Image (cartoon, rainbow, N blue to C red; front, side, top):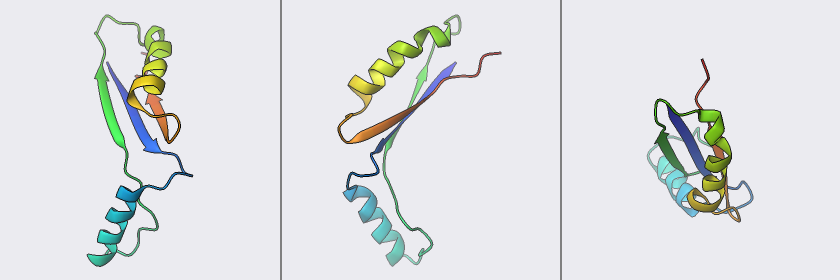
Length: 83
């Protein structure tokens, strides 16, 4: 089972890397993009016999304390679907 974590700059925080990529896209002729935000993506493989919902509180803690800087970044945690 895979857990997915998306870490992105908060909407109110300047993203210089995203701005640089946006500018490069403009120079390369792609003018349809209004804004670009650069973030990080993590995949965490859980043990097959693990109970994914039981791990969610600890994973959220890790997202807040390890994977992101809560002052300038948001995160989104996607847990696997239970069958």
